[in-house]
Image (cartoon, rainbow, N blue to C red; front, side, top):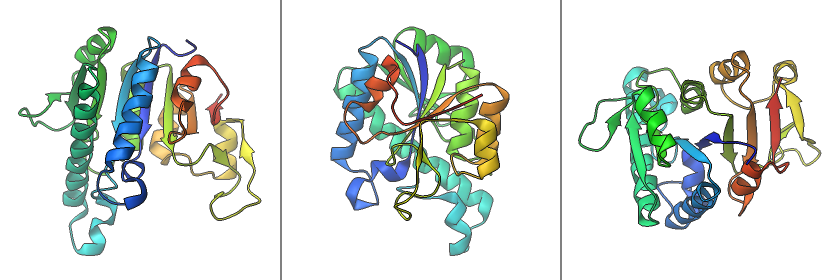
Length: 235
């Protein structure tokens, strides 16, 4: 395997499938199978999943909810998704651990770096929920921070788009896809890959990012084997 330990970042919106809200059973099954196939290759897998299919903290202010309160609500939404993914994985016989940035001892462990690494070494899938436990930080930032902490080889950002383009391919049919691009070029072009905090953290720690289409069957396994899928962002 090209990558021994990965941090897989999934979006909550993608988990909603065609319904665009809530959790799609079909999408959950597909993600579970993709993760299982990669795990069977001997890869150590940690996962961060967003909560946008349930609640987005950054949109809370439009409803009159305080931003900090909204962010905590968003963290709880990520835990709902994480619990659903955990159950789906365990139904396939996969050992998992759910670790949270918030103290909710009835359903998950608190995040402790050494314990997370030990779980990975034992072949368990580790899911990080509730962000980093603080407002004003996105799940992209959580993915970057946790990846650095557990010494992951790469951050795999699974989206519904098959890479990074010169423009939004869903709006601009003339947009061109990058196969490889440097961190500096992403800055220069102002491309929207991750929020700036998350992106800078990866850059400063020389942690490569691959943006790829998670919804295409087999893509995750191909990536960990070293095939050129999506867009690689590195130094």
